[in-house]
Amino acid sequence: MRVYKLIIFLCFILHCTVIGLLDPFSLGSAAAVLGLGYLIYDQTYCKWKECCTEKEIPGNISQLAAVLKSKVYGQHLAEEIIIKALKPHWNEKYRPLKALTLSFHGWPGGGKTYITGFIKEALFTLGGASDHVHHFVSRK
Image (cartoon, rainbow, N blue to C red):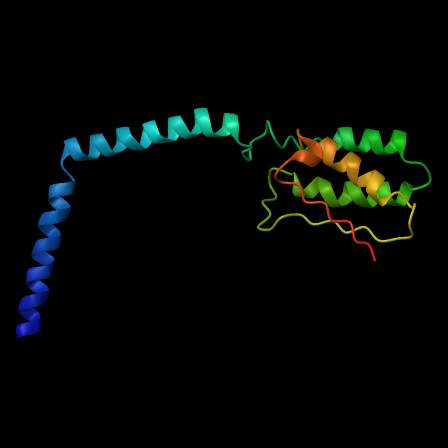
């Protein structure tokens, strides 16, 4: 019986608190503060730091394809595979849950770093200086 009364008392307190928080002044004030906070964040933070917007990450696959076609010689298979791997990742309908990772393997002088430079420049406004790009070069 004691637990039953405690539950009723807690429900009553919760009900009064929720009703008190839902008055128009509180809701209007909360909405105004949230809207102002988003406006300040959107207008200031993204001007000084790199955000995930179309401006910083244009994902220009057609530019990448043109650059690879004009600057890379004898690697037509690599061109096709790279474009085929990157195109769905920047498609509007395909929403990836994880970051895209590309790994290039081969002999020294094969053009792996050369090609990754073109990928970085075409897909990110800041290129290799972007916070979204991580380039690891393995050496013995």
